[in-house]
Length: 123
Image 1 (cartoon, one colour):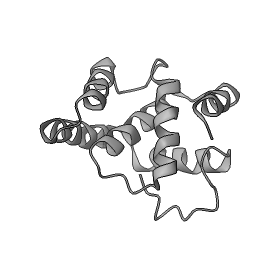
Image 2 (cartoon, one colour):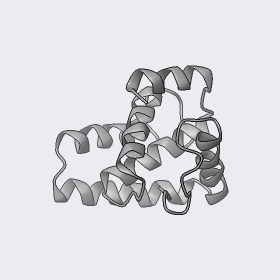
Image 3 (tube, one colour):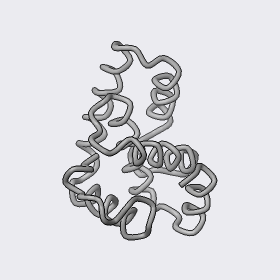
């Protein structure tokens, strides 16, 4: 998959605001170093985030996007701690069933490998 391929996937499968929030939460988890996805899946999720970052979310706001931008530019330990705190907060406002449904949907609709063990790829 390429960044253009992910953008095409998003065009064919527009995300609901709650799914945009899930994408943002996964991006935070990638940036704080706690994401257990394979490196190739992390790249796809980063491209997904880039493709939907301007779409409306349900609960996560522009401040979260600004933090992600800063963390991508300055990936040091103090920034990682800020991202960690924001990620934990994000995970408290997104219900577990919503996140699990999102992860299942992106696998079922072909963004990520549906054959990969989802427990190992827990984001």
